[in-house]
Image 1 (tube, rainbow, N blue to C red):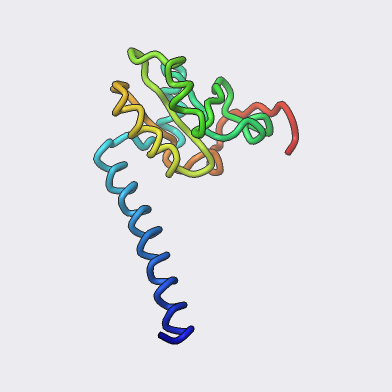
Image 2: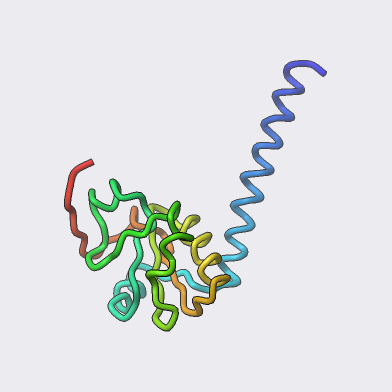
Length: 133
């Protein structure tokens, strides 16, 4: 097999894996039905446990006012701090981690889990900054 054929094969495998992963989470998100637009999220977030899934340094650089930092990498360990009888609203930079976290929380018995559809990058509401990146 030539170098060019090997390179094409590696690129194809990479695209299939990441494309398939992206498609899988988009389909699962549609099944969960938890995506909220900025306005829907902002209107109802005060009645929910608002969770920022980003790492602490990004949270400290700016987060939605009223959010708690519970990094996705520590979700399994810190999920016991959340109440199952209250809605859980998630967000991060985009939405893929939020969807993954929502799937885990649903599996662990949380019934009302929503996420910010386009993530913090597109957030237009109030934010709080504690440090600079």
